[in-house]
Length: 99
Image (cartoon, rainbow, N blue to C red; front, side, top):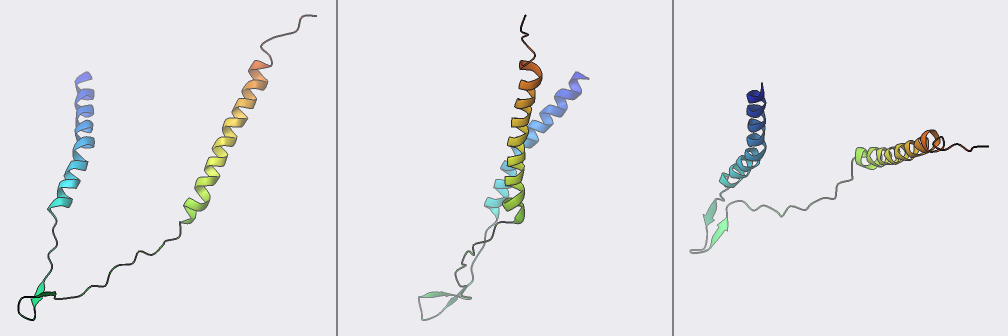
């Protein structure tokens, strides 16, 4: 049983550390070549002129706008309510006044 766990954990570790390296190696091997046409003797001009790409500012999706702030507020509220309940139930009843 212990050997199976070691085998599974070692396979998972190898996969976690090896997969990003494989992805980087594949990105490095991909090459793009441009075709050029010869004009006016020695000057090389591109066969197809491509206009520069202008990055358009994208509006954030509604999940980023609404769900993330709402879940953060709910998480903070849950922590606050938990602390208050702990104080009311445990700390308040910890000591009793002797009369």
